[in-house]
Image (cartoon, rainbow, N blue to C red; front, side, top):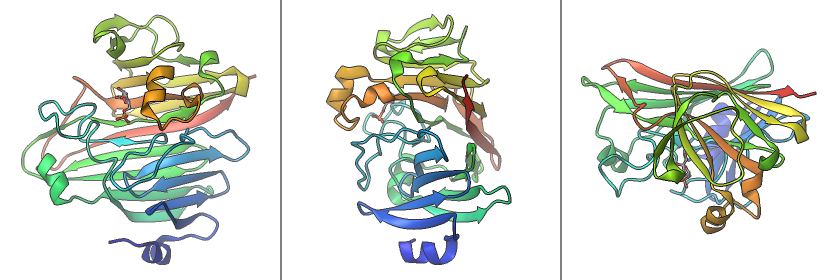
Length: 301
Ligand code: TA6
């Protein structure tokens, strides 16, 4: 079992990385030349990333609760090994168990360019094996720099193929969602989950003025969140993901959820790099699949 003491003894890096306790959970705190960030070992859940001199790029709810076995509202929840409800077992947790179980740190280093690299591995337990009885290894690598890079790697260590769904269910911070446009999905077919799963096609950028919960398909290219009030674009580049989920609960659902904070729904939008719905991934024995993203910020004049 990793403790704060042995994590700091083994992995702390002066001017880069230390481990702290927060509400009973262990959090890696990164503060380097480019950015600050925090990652909770439960779920390998990146909670914050703020490039120096910028508004936060990743949104963490002001009402987020850190508690053992509970998913944190905001940040980058890791959804794995399925996305959304389990296809056959209604009692299994939505979006899989990876976001609520313990991960261990397996590496950390300071990079020559001033960034910080960390790697985490999910720690399987009897409870996870009961829900996912397939031998495999899940590793999340994170590079905190002037971009935020995340690589979720699934290695099939067994002798049979496995099929997974996964997602980096990222909450991005925006000035006011009503003023924001999401580019990169024009023409993409999507399932509209707030319209009984109706199949539709996106025309132009996505603007949000009400609850939105959509799975877009054939979306391998970049998405860009354009935020004129903060004079910035957040660019989302990805590999190993052919679907994209856009989600905001809007006011009524947000109030029922209870952990989004007052008017929090206006300051966030989830643009999730996924393998969702029919866009699942089959991994042959001894092969691996990587879901990789790079988040960056561009000035908008
Ligand atoms: O990815 C969109 C979504 O699946 C929505 O349907 C909504 O429920 C959201 O994720 C949050 O899910 P959570 O389980 O974190 O409350």
